[in-house]
Length: 305
Image 1 (cartoon, rainbow, N blue to C red):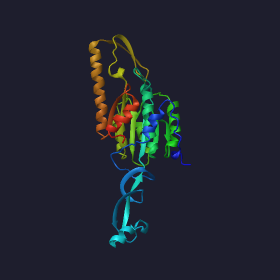
Image 2: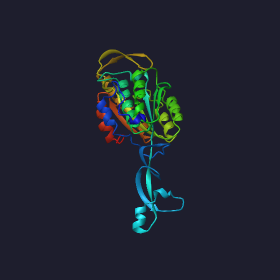
Image 3: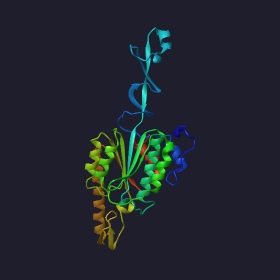
Image 4: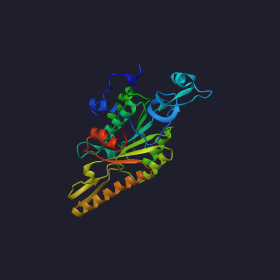
């Protein structure tokens, strides 16, 4: 039996509710460009070939498949014409989920890591339901656990298991991890990066390494409300989540103002790095419900449809 045709919806554990998954099955990831597929999927391309969706008629020429001749038109007009079709092709989709230690932070409704896993599960499930060619890779200083599926939502159980059991650790190395990820995907396609972009020093270089290979990029920037406005006061020790370094500080009102300004400036830098690659960039708060983000905002932004 084709796993994608199974009437049993794979268990998503606590990542996705059954109702949410049912809604995702009606959606598909949207790319701005057409990507020629290696096998039949459920995505229309503008190429003409033998597919399932009628496109147009054209005058018969020697060598055309006689099975596509429309004999009703011939009987009515005494002209030989053949039906042409839009081919259906699968979209190569790679989801890169930041699994560095800085993602293990949550001062609001949930941690950045938990939200990242839910987003990867939701987008991955939508891709599998559309029979897109899905790859999911976790990364920190290198590529770590990977999910490399064929097509069909029957494989989603393995994706959920990977996300349920993985844990964030280590520092981020965007250039090294992205170069490795780009080399693993043979065909150009859609790359979705889910990260807090904490170690952003070489982010622009890393994103360009994917663009230069012909990939289209989407950046989902996860921000905890306490990062944007920590509300600290007095003598505190700040810890770098990726290096463990403690930095003693005296926090006053002006210090907080400088911090907020610096944080917003860093977010603008991240947005500019994506804009330079013509990438879709979305800043997301961990307080935002994942289901609402995916089913509403992502559709408005054109990521899903």
